[in-house]
Image 1: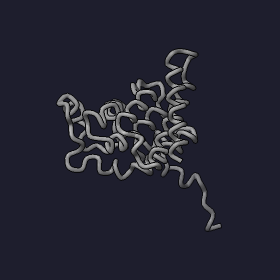
Image 2 (image 1 turned 90 degrees about the horizontal axis):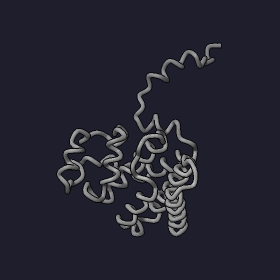
Image 3 (image 1 turned 120 degrees about the vertical axis):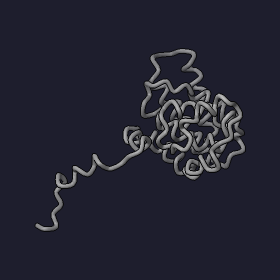
Image 4 (image 1 turned 90 degrees about the vertical axis):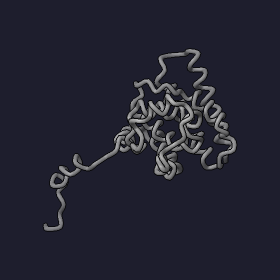
Length: 187
C-alpha cells in the first residue's frame, strides 16, 4: 500500500505550476491549431530567445519605437495581445526584419487561435501579403511548410468563425488556397 499514489494528494500542485500566456493559450487550442503553432515554435524558438539581444530589433519609425518601448525585454511568450498585434503587423517592415517576424508569428497565432473574438487586425490574407513582401519563396523549405500549414489552419479558423458568405470569406478562401499551394511546393 505504500507505493500507491492518490491523485488528490498531488492535485493541489497543478494550480501553482507557473505557466506563460502561451502555455495557457496552447491548452485551449484544437489539435490542428496546437500542432501548427508547436511546429512554428520549434522552428523559431531560437529566434524568439534572441529577440531582444543587442537591444532588440531595429526601429525605422520613431512611433513604433515609442509604441513598443514598454515591452522592450519582455519575452514574446508573455507579450500582451495588443503588443503581439503591433509587433506582428510591423515586424519585417518598420521593426526589424524577416527573422523578427518569424520570431513573433507563432505567438501571434496562438493568441489569435485562443482568443478568436479579439480584434487581431491581421487576417490571413494580410499575413499572406506580408510573407510575399518578406521573400517567403526564398525561406528554407521546412520553414515554408510550417508557415504555410499554419496560415492554412488560420484561414480555416477564420472561415469557421465567419457569419456567412461575404467578400472577406473569398479572401480567406484565397489565402487558404495560397497557403496549401505553398505547402505543396515546399515538399
